[in-house]
Length: 513
Image 1 (tube, helix red, strand yellow):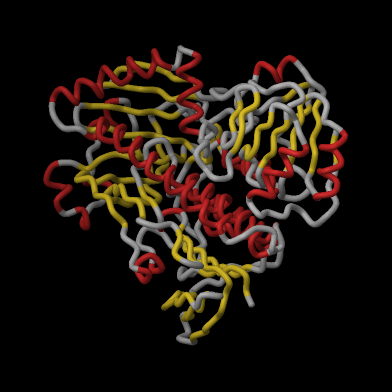
Image 2 (cartoon, rainbow, N blue to C red):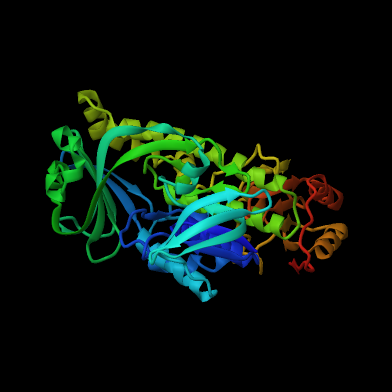
């Protein structure tokens, strides 16, 4: 029997299939479209996503193919108001301290090629017609574009089929929230008129605004803006010529060619449940929100990784079914918080009225320029947007505190003389980190239980990052801290797994000093 059927081959589904395969899970992935996306919908690949891509050997490839945005310029009524440097905004926080622009169509092709290198093909032109949870497995009926049908059985089904998810609708799972009244447009264009140094621009001109994101050095850029007045009443007939060009004209933008144009209304919704029996919702199938901060695709990818290691543990008989419930509690809580945060920012950006226009034109650039000069504020904003600040402190999998690090947090990144503590282990799995000296008992426990032990010679940089000397940090397969034990005790480590009925790796562990 198949282990997991993945429905939907966008970035969320593709990453989920990659992580499952990397952990020895039998997987099939289907998509009703005939080819990968050909438009640059999502643009930003955040630092936390790149950190986790290191475990798949993907990070370097994506970074080298992507485009690092050096700075964000803010314009108001044709005048330059602020420049916010972004090139190394996360220095000391992440091995990827920048904003990376990598259009979704290129991103998907990279992920598909990686799957193909493992002998896994996306089954295109294949639609899910219906599904039934049989208790011990899920039965799914598929139809291909030639009209042939197939009924397959899988132990679990992962729904990555977008905001209009067929799976969510068939299960009758609510998708509460709302829709903003404004109509937005997106366009991929060749442009001139701005010095193409690769820097991003936000141009505000009364009620009209445009965001410019370059994604190569030849002048190709993504434009994002709003459609207002009577044109928004019948968006189905919109073309690029119909949208407001005042903001573009105010900074001298000239669009030489429109390569793609679309429009949409922004939704803010979260599914009532992320899990129903043996079926799980991920990505846009479970949550949608405004595009503020470039969070959507990255949130779906982190959904995929969170669930993948838990499914692998249960499928391999290492953990009870209860482990899968933590996917829903961890990711649904984050989705609600993300919707709330982006909603507040989005409401400010799109508010109507003269006061709102004045705030957008003068207040926002002034505040943004000043805020990024303050180190603590800059760090807080980077952690929020990059998702390096995402934590699961209230999860049933999170326990303890050592130094400034609590269970459920992302481990601080530290690089001492080229020794990078985010370097991935040989295989995806649990890790124990000790900064200082691990006890013989901990070393023996890791070898006996197939857990990689990484021991780092204590350095001043570790203390500055909030780590405690000789403490024990147990990292989940997705590298969040599961257990922080200041005493560095093997008994505490063993009790963590015993209390959760979890059997760790079956292979012999390794020690890396």
